[in-house]
Image 1: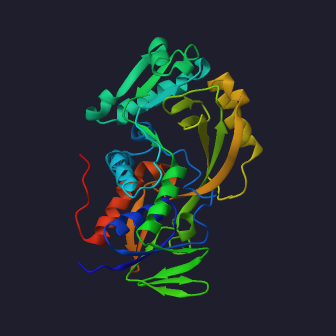
Image 2 (image 1 turned 180 degrees about the horizontal axis):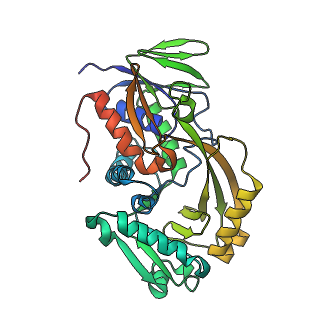
Image 3 (image 1 turned 90 degrees about the horizontal axis):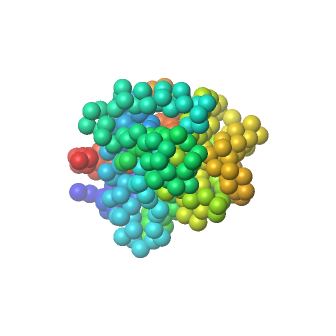
Length: 357
């Protein structure tokens, strides 16, 4: 097979992961992005990277669930393959997710449980466990005595998105990928990527700019997400925890060195400004209610970004006007990215997509 030159606009989660897969297959890749590769104010970095196909099924559909299930097979394989390059390891855990609620909010947990039981395929129901207070304390000792019970979704996981993105950048360098950082792409055409100062000829053009693709795909919209990152040596969690609430569902994802990524907010707004005081107070107070030791947590970062969404809230891989588009990852970016990237990579490579088993 002749090695083609693939030009990818957008070096976020989808674009960067696709570049790595194509480089591994021996293809030439050029990657274009208006921001530097280490930028923090991006959708890829404003995420908890929770791999929760079961929990997300309660608020999404079967298509997203199927992509998530397929991605859960690909993630450990891809993390192992990325490590073959000799780079820094990527934090990845698959120890399940806990879902809890305070006594006044039990109705929210009960509603979530009913939705999950209704939508979950029969073959997956054994992965959902109802816990009483004692069983919850055994699973997560830090929460002992704080909740009357909860749900344990045993197959779910998480990874450190900052480590994944940094490791990809290093591996793309090692494999000979060409970066065009600080290059704002004005438009993509068949066989061309047009920047402000130059037009670059490629064999195949791929648009992975997320919300930046709106000029060529008007159906893409931005949905604001906000995330808090803290350090708290006084709390140890083994797995992500979702705290149900009538207005939002808080998630707390543990990271190495007693760090935690906290999120909940999802606003139908394309305001890309700093995190609001209201969101900061909501995230902080909900985190404190999970465990009082979080009251002494050090705030490391507050971040906001626009997540790209389509009307059906499903990721999409489409060929439009001679340009491939990968977009619409919405709030399911890390959950669905491997399956979606795998689909496009194999279409470009002309081979069958890897099936999850």
